[in-house]
Length: 287
Ligand code: FAD
Image (cartoon, rainbow, N blue to C red):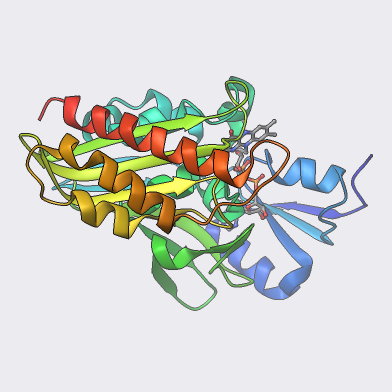
């Protein structure tokens, strides 16, 4: 199938993109890396009148770290995250996660902003944002809004973005040497969207984890923080003794769906398996 006819404009500046978006309202659609939008156009799942290509806005492609704060421009590509020494040093969760995103050709073009705006419930980066308690920065015609990741993802392909707004950056605070991470997912083949996945972020002292955030993906309509499960492990010395209780809490807390890839029971079981794996990783990471 081929895309329905559309007009195309390549924005030279963010201000120009915002003006065009304001003028065309819901008939316009932003293009970043095109790795999700182009298939949607070709399958005629989307048929905008106008494509506003922001992919060339170099000012939105950056990674910066200072004083425990990581800022990532929306047009930072998956490959940039994967190759960044700064990300590997300060926030290895993203390095681990992005290695699971699709394949090299898609990682070369796809962007973090596009992935978050697309909000696929089985995608890796939205769950990482939840685990990292990130703030998503969006810019509209008149002002900027800062939205906590937990309020940003609303449902399947649905976010808090309003028409005319551009996701411009991601702000992650509280990064430091006490942080530890874990990431694991189960997919049919490497590069496929996950059947179930889990991103973990916490502060670690010895074998104790605090501020533990467990963000599951592929189990519901949006990435899900397993707060009750985290509470069974929070601040506990000898964490492994509490694994059975945590897995029991997880079975209660998660409300997964069934599809062609897995039954509800299988997803619940796999989530428990991943919990054990990421806890192991988080405790093994040098503190
Ligand atoms: P686009 O395709 O350009 O845009 C996606 C959507 O977001 C569009 O609706 C667009 O209007 C909107 N948008 C884009 N940028 C912005 C912005 N800055 N502000 C507001 N709205 C914006 N992803 C995974 O996470 N895991 C996978 O395993 C995975 N596997 C894939 C396999 C295949 C075969 C393909 C084709 C894609 C796969 N993807 C996967 C998707 C890939 O990660 C995309 O790169 C990503 O979802 C979208 O990023 P993009 O920059 O290409 O966005």
